[in-house]
Length: 128
Image: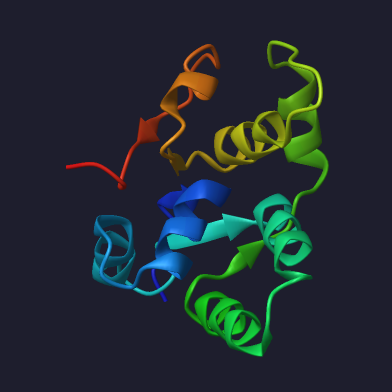
């Protein structure tokens, strides 16, 4: 398995789950196994969102996470979070801290919400 290089933001995961032919889905599929991962924060957000979905959507989510490993959020990530510019009620800050602590590129279609995070590397796989 390859070392992680990319941390997928929740919105990129949603694009992949919603449309297997999307640009984001194609980019994820092109990644070597283990190079694209998701934060435990993203996993929690997606599990919360899938609660009202049917069995087909739940199966898609389960299949997705068989190919995209979930990485735990721990002490190093919490310390990185403590040093970020504060923004109230935002899981984005936790995900940004996770990417920073692991030295990964954050893949998101929400570049604007992460622009003020010093040192964070960003890519948008939802747009060409």
